[in-house]
Length: 290
Image (cartoon, helix red, strand yellow):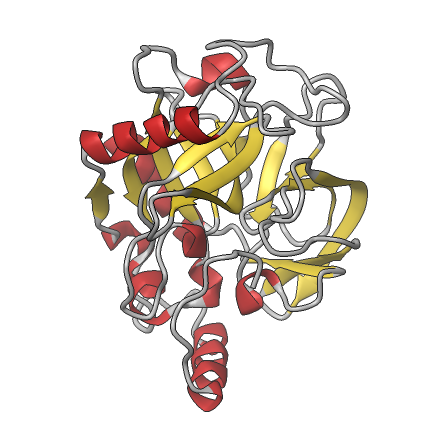
């Protein structure tokens, strides 16, 4: 599991059965609730505003409300750290997320388990997305969700093939659109399993991201995998970017760290759900909700 937020334990035999069953029926619309039926959760404005105020009170305030969408020190502006509000009201680094191109320029991609616990659990409270995060700073501002979208198959049973989620975001106190500020990746659907990918993620124990560039992804049962060290807790949701532009770091995103064991138990081997029509349906839901 690559998120620092952990749900209640499920008996091992149940987990094994659920993973095998989900893998066996992947792509069978009669067996898995289609992503197109995903319910969109609306986030109360007060929840987002409160979370953004916590950032201002606890961490470095934004360096600017808008920036140049270029890769700084190899760090793409469109990728950032995802925080949630814990039971003590503090913001805790939780996952990684990235900006995805959309008509309204306000969609962010991450893993479903970074948004919802799955297995009939709850939504993650008080989310804050900080693109370009480094050393406590928020160079491209602080963004909060207005909508969250995951598939019912994730909500109900934690289907690892549906461990993909979307956020529609806004910047409190501003009318900026996030894609105009950071740039964005484009969504790659049904692109196959084998790619040369660049993956940038935020380990929880570090204020800087880890990046592997030009690594080969491959098929692992119904999912993608790649090998590169140090993708520890906090890197869940990190985008797998093919054909990355050397100037901006943006390209076509073909996966996110998640899926099998929520991204894998070995920090040197990472997994992603395959981006097929289920993911496209979720994306369409996010666009319609934005």
